[in-house]
Amino acid sequence: MVKGILGQKVGMTQVFTEEGKAVPVTVVQAGPCSVLQIKTQDRDGYQAVQLGFKDKRRPSGSVRSAGSQARKSERGHVAAINSKRSAARKARGIDLLPKPECEPKRFIRELRGETEGYEVGQEIGVSSLADVKKVDVVATSRGRGFSGVMKRHNFSGQRATHGVKKCHRHAGGTGMSASPSRLFKGVRMAGQYGNTRTTVRNLEIVGIDEEKQVLLVRGAIPGPNGGYVVVSETNMKK
Amino acid sequence: MSQQLLESIEADYLKKDNAPEFEIGDTVDVHTKILEGDKERIQVFSGVVIARNGSGTREMFTVRRIVAGEGVERKFPLHSPRIDKVVVKRSSVVRRAKLYFLRDRIGKAVRLKERRR
Image 1 (tube, each protein chain N blue to C red):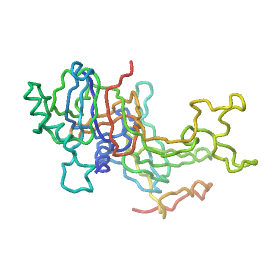
Image 2: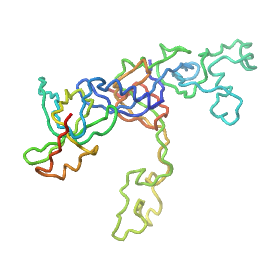
Image 3: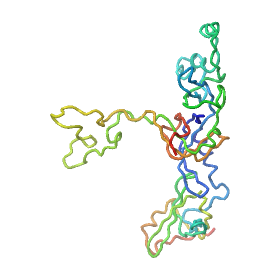
Image 4: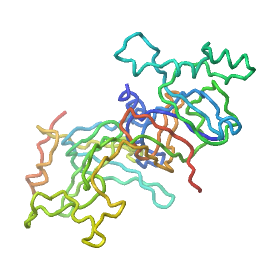
């Protein structure tokens, strides 16, 4: 059974262990999540549990915020909606997927792995990670835009003086001369940095607060405060 | 909302009622628990509180003393369970929150005027 939960990064702080050691922790508001769908080997070709976190607004009629409102497909994903297609499928004797009958969700992710123990519509809280010691955290890293090589690849740049002209943060050489007279693939250069899916593995769980639905994870996790994260049991071997 | 949540998490780790009470410029004895092998003993560091920094669980205070003619400063986490207690020996008249000017002073000039409570 895969163990994991969706959540939102709250921020970092410092807590003390019983021996009095200060531990840097990231606070994650985790859950409650709903199980929206269970993917099966027969039907989908792989096994996974689909979780949803935080309610998404239903349409209010305002066009301006249409992007943050649940569309009909999203509403139909969490609750049965009568449609021509569902009527036709029923008439042909196809079983429709069970629906969780909850509000549409804002952040939906799948956890791949064994699915026994999960059922559609089930609520998952932080207590599901109670006996987990180490976790992997997946999130979208902070976007830094089009960044130079010093920021993006930790290059050293060039000297501040001694005749360096307007090249203080440049990369220097990127290759050879007439032979091979081309650039090798994979040479590190300036470009888009951040805003990618980033995983941090093997982080220790320092504390779980079931009342506040909060998880304390040792160390830093990617993304800004308020960013959505997936916390799951680590796949590192011991 | 998230800031309040963060503070409520920190609140569980703060010394609420028994937080050490002292002011900048106070001469204090800081009692710290030290583990030696499996024995615990108390070590005392005494000196003048010259600064307090940070907030919440990260709050630290700096104590300065002169050992064998050499200035020694130690920074303690205020809410650490290793800090047993802080005893105020003497208070003094100070007009600023950070007494870093004491670092440049030698000998008699280090003295601060006592404040009677």
